[in-house]
Image (spheres, rainbow, N blue to C red):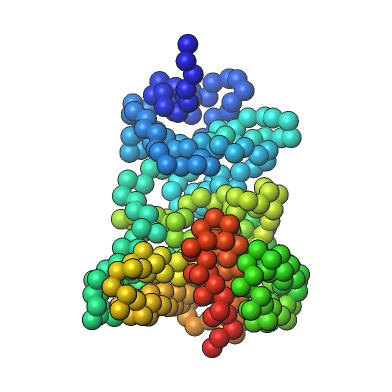
Length: 363
């Protein structure tokens, strides 16, 4: 006798796929969204490399994400994909169905079935390729290189704006005191300084960004992605898709479903552009050190160019003073979080968010 993960078993997975059509009675409920006829004859393939979830592809028709960490309650990834799918959004893989069951504490979501994005390319990898193309052309600027990413950044900004608009129309919205949000940011900074002592040198300018946020009065909040970065995006022949709407995995489900400022998502993308540029720069450390200052300048140039194109598309033009204040505070908060994360997990990378912190409040 032996035991192994059923996701490796094609017969077991075929049973799950067919269950979305046959709706068998029992402890599991296989819910379907109408509008797509599943291909029930294809074989399953388990993807490798995932940690918190597992994904099984059914040919090139659909993909089943199986949640490995189960929490009672409505999974935000399913809830948001359902809303965006029913709204006809072009910026997510369509939701086909999900698996749920009753448990102590309420309903639990076990898996979700989605459209398989056959032509999808990871947004993070695309961005890294663009930076490498820039570094390979010593005499060209970012806008002159064949792999310029600015057009993609523009399309990403438009996609996020449209997703936010749909979510605001589909879920509860409201306002919260800006001072309350700013105070939470100050607390996170105070907790971070003992872990990353270098942050103490920048505390005044960080708190200045939080004070400016506090002065805004009330902040509009809504459902958002809540953990957005380039690794949560896919480029397909039909445009950009956003994925993984589960929110910040370290937070409790009750926190992840709370309305928040859409500028948290925007700040996450700002930081991700910065990481892409400087991750490639770091990977070349030790190679031709005489060119290191030039690589640093080019990394900054790539990040600045793509941030600006993304922001202009997202906001529909230049940022207002209020939007600039919101963005600065949320970027500062995200960078502080990254400093703590890198110190605990990748100490050699902490210079990337620390350099961003140093730029907070600098004209």
